[in-house]
Length: 305
Image (cartoon, rainbow, N blue to C red; front, side, top):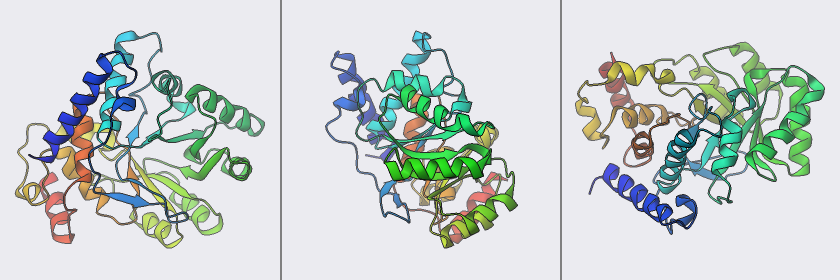
């Protein structure tokens, strides 16, 4: 039975359990399917599945949107049932943190929570971070990041205090769209952080020198926009998969693109966002089977045109 089918069947079983009225489907699952690809945080050695879930735009909806919440609940159910852990959000993402709290009304031990501080007002940083914990309904967050480097010097001090107090386990910075590479390089070279979140995909390879520097400095890398904000998959829609997909056991362009990204050993986790429960299984399928070697990566790039 192929990987994608196994993932979809596991997700369907979890959803059926939830429908019986016994609580969130991911809390019902007795065992997630085996996750082949995990990556470690260099500073701790803790390993997580190398595909997570982003919430930018996709989870920004009013919490009284019953139909919308039901669809996001299905996304989370399939994500956890397929072995996913890291979910990333931010105060910048509108209602996304409140939606996460609503959907995680009961504790989920497999969740690796990641959010951010995003304010230009230094004194408001701790207040915003406390509000994020309240919205997520969590006593602490696994990863707190300075969003888009905004006021990073001040916020990093607060993040270190929170880390020392046990309010967050890891701290980091984020950037996207290839912004501020010199500033990111400076932070990697001069500051002690655990995580760099950055944009990287076959459509935008500009981050590769920073990925190498992060690996050299012992900093984990979370990749945002792995599908170029969805533009890459939209362009590939309807196009047949290339022969290299069979070599890599990929049944979708999503899995093939993610495997290309994860073949860079500096990448700890990629966080595609989606509102489609079926796409979650395709994304998590990238955790199974071989990663591309140099020849196969070149073949993927050639196929993408």
